[in-house]
Image (tube, rainbow, N blue to C red; front, top):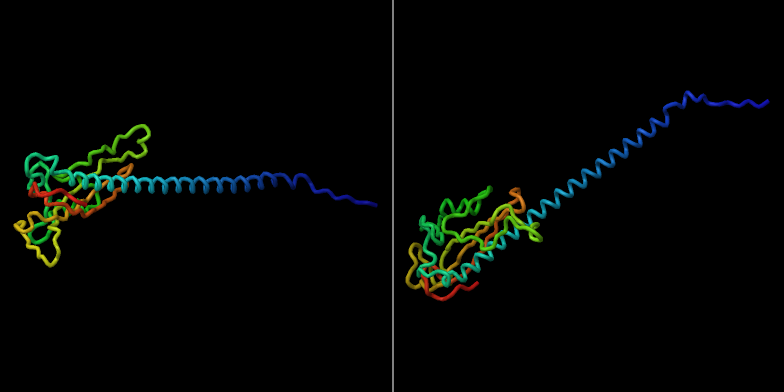
Length: 214
């Protein structure tokens, strides 16, 4: 005699639904993880792009100021293209105090964490880098870069000696070191880069003595 045992259908009720819910929960977790990873990668990419834009903006401003410094004696008809900055609105150059201390505004521009406006008398970058449109829109910056130009002394051999204070007669025709500092933001104000360049040029505080050289 054969006896066949069958499991009651009532005991299986809900098992498939439970397994389906478990798989649905796993798929949801995987989807959320993938979305979070994609968003994080997008933010990282945007941050890198912002950093690159800020760096390119600062580099462009530095090179543009070097070019401006090269041609400044030919662009100015006053006979004194770059006098020391003393509160005037015309083009000028900042110098350290007699003891070598930088002016407070100069130090703030070079080292401040936040954005610093351009100091009086500084040349602006000639090419607009904000509000770009068309194919150039992706390279548009949040602000136009600002630059700072400092005269940090004559470019003479150490053995020749350098005296502090007023420029000595023997160094009137000497080449000077000019420090150019540029600040630029990226595509947004969240990123800011500062770039410096030391540029050797003829003494622009006494016009008529040669041309600038890099």
